[in-house]
Amino acid sequence: MGADGSGLSCDRFDPFGLSRMREGAPARSINMAPMPSPTRLLPLNGASNFRDLGGYAGANGRSVRWRRLFRSDHLGELTAQDVAQLSTLGLARVCDFRGREERLPRACALPGVAVHALSIEPTVVQGMQSLLAQGRALTPQATVALMEQTYRDFVLHNSPRFAELFAYLLDDDVPLVFHCTAGKDRTGFAAALILSALGVPSPVVMQDYLLTNDFYRQPAAAGGFASQEVLDVLWRVQPAFLQAAMQVVESEYGSLDAYLERAIGLGPLQRQRLQQLHLA
Image (cartoon, rainbow, N blue to C red; front, side, top):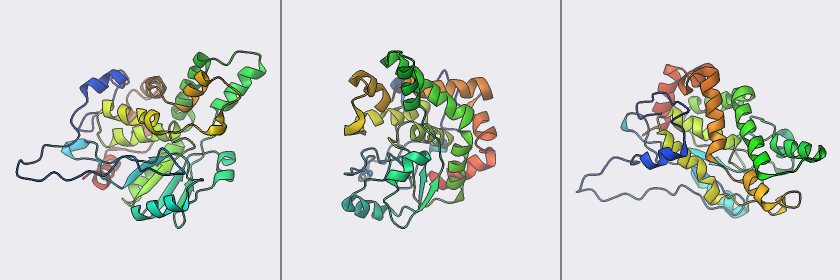
């Protein structure tokens, strides 16, 4: 999506667009002292993928506001030090994409916030177990196929949950964090939709999506049932995953703009309000 908020076609939503990435912020006057930007990653002991969506160049020369929109892995293992650090952000809402069985053993550890369950049940591990039950090999290629189908299903079956997130984003501009278990797939698709709706260029959207590979720590108990090559597919992200979702957006709706309006409820007036609230 261009800086004017125009639609994003799936053929432009690819990692090679990173080479065309634009500068994030307008140049400052030579007489102005540079102001330090907030850090994108908030280092925590109990969550490794807690990131700020702020600072990216968006529509009409404006930038996504810092310290308002956050994406993360689950918040069920935060330490007291983590809670103290996050309390300085003024977080008011937590939107949790995890399924019921994911949430129960690791409930949100942040006190004093409204937690909204936007449940999207996980399917990849179940798909892997089905392959094993059929006596089929669990290969990296088979796991990639499962991941790509999961992203297609975000569009085909889970759009109402993402629409609920946008309804909260349209309410006000109080700080909000959305997350799933690893903060990479359900959360990654949601972040791509948000940044695109705010006019962030598609190569930058992809770059933000891929940052999970730099920050997320694979859980220590994740091994045992699959090779490390398979686990690397499961616990990391690839451009092809997000592209699979965007290809379904294109085939089913014609454009990302049409998907945002028809499936997410983000028409021109709502898009304008979203940008007023979350761009600076």
